[in-house]
Amino acid sequence: MYQLQGVLKVRAAFTDSLLLLIFSQPFKDATLRLSTNRHPRIFEVIPIIDKLNEHLEAAKKPPPKQRTMFDVVRMAAVAGLGILDKYYTKMDESIMYRIAMLLHPSYGLTYFDKMGWPKEWKDVALDLPRTQWIKNYRVEAPTEAQPTVCLPTIFDDLDVTLSTDPFEHFIASPPIPKEHCSQPLLWFGTVSPYASDPSPNNKAFIRMAQDFLSAPATSTDVERAFSHGGGMVTKRRHALSAESIRANALVSAWRRQDLVPEAEAIKVLGNRHSRKNKKRTELGGTIEISSGDEDDEVGEGSDGDE
Image (cartoon, rainbow, N blue to C red):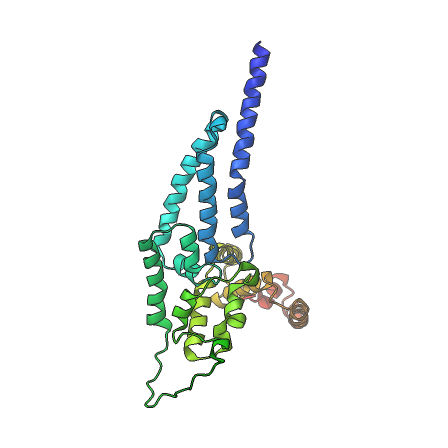
């Protein structure tokens, strides 16, 4: 009897652990999506949080027949919702998240409608990019004394006509399916109707969209660059100038993005290294004759800034 009770307890503990593992999987997936992606962008944050919120809500209210075996998961879901809501409200402190969502060709106001945002929330979210557009990007068109008048034809409805204000045109347009807009930054610069008409305001609107959509979702890259730069300066190597540290950090970051032509870099650095060895050999020969002190040779031939 006691053995059976022990087996049942172990089985219950194993079941709870397995359920917690399944319950936690979306959080692992979200972490990997943002931390391992080479270019995670800020417009990915709100959809990911919404997906996690749906997952927690479903776990908090499981089917009635599963209530007894889901107790540990339900408690974890309630705690998770509290933490998620805390950080979700933090996004109201920045204009970046909502503007990036509105300027994404596949989201816009339609996404907020889909998620059931109240009207006052959507009005605030729309006022934020409109204010940025008017104050910082929009180009005021010069007034014309005699505007050009074009006579209407029966073929006018075949032409793609944009609103005089590209921002208002974009907001009123339906979202683009994601399969046709996998890279929103490139979409604005190459495929969008604003790219085909290079007017000053269209160029300004493209620049605004790319400014907000290119914002990184995390500070991982910045932190890595900072850590790399900090690791260069040690108690045994502290004579590097600020220019050398900055150059090293930049080249390292560029190399991780495959922006440095490796063959050309090896050729340039190899030639430089050969010239230094030749110079040090000649200098070492002179010092050896005059002093014969190997330590002086190293002291004279070293460059504190390399």
